[in-house]
Length: 468
Figure 1: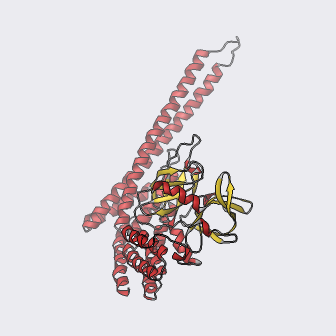
Figure 2: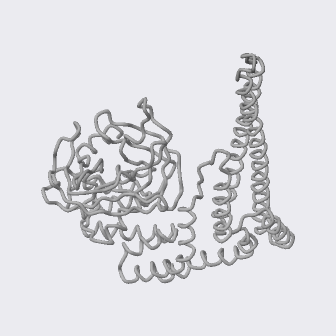
Figure 3: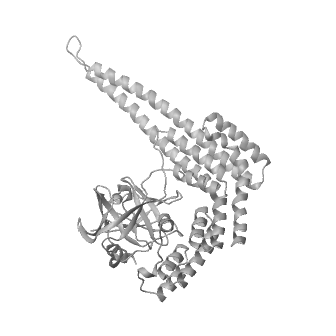
């Protein structure tokens, strides 16, 4: 495993060094002014002129995107100034119209002049609205094009340049309040995740190799995952799955094979052990449980706000509560799913329960962490569980709250639920409530004055059977 670390480490160190020139060229854009943008374009021109093929290709993309972004921002500001001037004229027309409607010394009003003034005011405001809509459309397209460039930088391991230019976009978009602000793929939370990974990646890879050498496969797996090393994660994950199988933890082994995308291996093991009980899952305590559960949690966002969900099946399948998905007419709203690393996806709603507050979604994401569903027979009075959820808006890492079963099965709002000693914010709704083996023993629905209700695992399992 040490040799594996020696191979992997340079893969992450070299791109960072290669990215130093391009990253340094855009550093001054931490203060995103047009003057700084011009200086950055000059520096990129120099790099493009003398650089190798890689630098030239990326440099040209960065040059084009930076120039277009600040050009479009300038156009938006000019459109805004024109709209403000039109509004000032419209307000003057409104005042003139009101004066025309005031009786003169003869008691007469000029309705014709007033009507014309009001009409002129409406036309000015309509022109501003059209201009705003047109600018909003252009801005949305420009931001999407800029973020494609950011994706190229991330793929090329140009993290330094990526962080600088993504931060520029966030700041510029905040300033363009006159137009509709597009939802950013590279928002502040995602930028912070990338920054943390860049700072810690060498240490994480070293710790992953040491943990594997010491037999700590679960810890090594998590370090490789955090570092973004798919090769390290897969190799250690496969060893961990085989070890769990040898130890008789077939449920945990199946789950890890699914996490690695090895569905055939998981299905073969499932055929050998078709009936799984709690004994087939390894007990996890403290930080080990958090490392197992938190990465499988996701943020679910609609026009109604955000809640929590979690991956329960390979291939991007997510469970959450249904209420946030529905508008006033009970029609499904557009849904976004955001992962721990800040990646955001449009989700397809596969199914919504008629009676219970549960829904299943799917996103275009293949390999990820996921959680198994537990058995209602294992819910006991006094059982200690943990709720995971994403309450903070500025980060996408799940927090954990301990809870205790007060009543294993209890009807609440015509739903089969468990009553829990728990108090959590509404953003935790849809989050998994797990036992010490990492199995989902409920989906958090609501809490009030220290007690809460979760949809019990039997109802979850019955719902999911409809989609097998």
